[in-house]
Image (cartoon, rainbow, N blue to C red; front, side, top):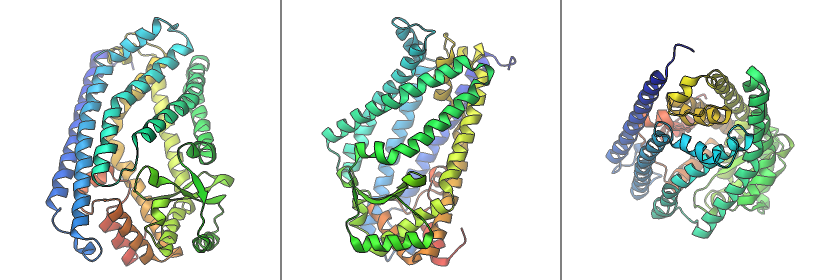
Length: 421
């Protein structure tokens, strides 16, 4: 990599940042324009199930979120430039060097954790606006300010309790494992993620929500029969008090092995009929039966291995730091700097990950249609689209780039006509 220069990296970074930012803004403006143009007419395939006021609410909600996203993009770019070329990251490192040994592990931990804290604080105004203005305006927010602050405190404590030991292990491996440190860090990262998957249902999720066993015996029996047909075993069937934060509804499976749980939002149960709940769970079962969770975990691990290998090639190169206006090379600085700027260069992989996710959604729908009534799933989806104010008319290119789920019209048409996954 001796052919690279600091100026070359600076130019490449600025070009990638400009191109990705321009693309993100262009896609957002396309989304706003497309949804606005289709606001006054319900798509023909939904004319009998979605009212015009509900369709218009979904359009307005989508536009409001997208416009807020434009502000988020602009702020994010400004912060990134200030931290890198503006010298902010170097300044942060210098401040910690006044009280901590720059060559020590705790300096690296302090640098990383303070950067996370800084980015969280800078994101706070938009988060507050999203929650207490946008979500409230459209009738979704049930979060109170005390609950919001309590969540922030819990997230900070958990993030520190889990993040600091992980950082210490990573920095120790980077310093002690020689040229193959990236492989050892990857193994540690895999172990950490698998541990979180194991403990999340029983130790982390209950910190934020209350989980109670499903009390409806007829629905519980219906779900038990579905699980038996599908050959699926779960540790329990729980209802989560999602309504204390939002009126959005959902259902999911969590954990793996003997710790698998089925979780239903209380908001979902108040809206869907028992047969529709069964169909939604059949879809979620499809993700497990088609091994989507493990496929995504495998891709995540493969991508993290590739990124750590790249970092292993860059971390000792002076031009990597100088090109991003950092004068203090080191393992912690290299780690922080790399993961701060790498999204700029990987942005255009987003459509591939979205396409892969939509493929899984089609497969899960097909599985649900085989093990439950597809019309029940269609009715459930229509209710969820309406209750969550999901736009029925997204811009096709914006959807292809970002959406992890297929557009409503496409998804329901496949269910109704029995198209293969």
